[in-house]
Image (cartoon, rainbow, N blue to C red):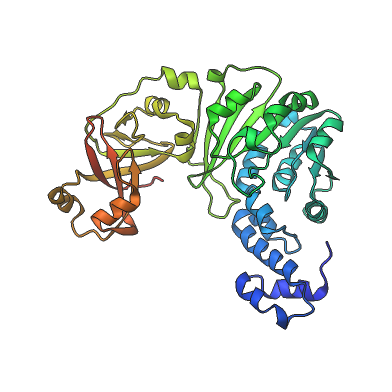
Length: 408
């Protein structure tokens, strides 16, 4: 992809401007390839948060919005690379190359890498970007991924990220509804590789995914800043009973997408451990309240997390916990309880007082956040956190909290 001088100059001069406003000014710049320029400006602006190390390189080219929207962030791509053992480094084939974020961040772990992508424009972008980023050992194949899989020689690792949209643009979350269908390809994938890393929608049911695939070795649920982003499955040649598959719940904390830091929010369990873990329920609240991070809630490690961190669960379906003493490194948000009440007007007045705004979360409660906010007349924000939930005695309550000092 070649950009003329006027187009490059326009991109540099307007890199921080609003793309929609620039589009209206297109007639003023007859020598600028405006569709390309707008795509590059929008891409660079998105990369500032999503792929910051690429954003720092001005010559990187970006694809159209959909490809950029669907690609991994730098934080999740770096995490994927951390999964690969050093002893496994050798050869990697990425069968669904896309914009190339995952391929690029996985590639330093391997001596030989093949990027496969059926869209020619994305291959052109990858051909431009990879050498620019010092990734000269990546070979680019403009080919259908399944055809390449059928014809390729064996490698150490295969990475595959099935498309999660149907022919009408709707989102799909079941393996069978993705393209390609990894369940149908599982035998062939493992015939061609020792290990396969499968990236799936965070909306996919983990138990169903493990049921659909026969050779899952481990699962990783990745959140960034407590928003669930990806479900990763690692396939191998050994069979592991579904209840013994390790499930890794990760919550990466990052401000700029690249400088991730761990804060104790890495939690691993198995279904067998979850089923065998005792869980103590309580109808009363102690001094502290805990909400597991999004990955743990997605994975369903409700009893195991209570058992390990010695906290009491408020209700089998509430997924909130309490303790009398602060719990260090709890994998989620920690709060100090400052008040509790029912929705009785007099009790509400006593606990909320003249409060004008608060952050509201609903867990196992008959009203939505919007309905509750309207009822108690509070706007969003501030330093106060309200949890509407149900206690083990089935009482519906509103818990007023503040963040526990030095946590979250």
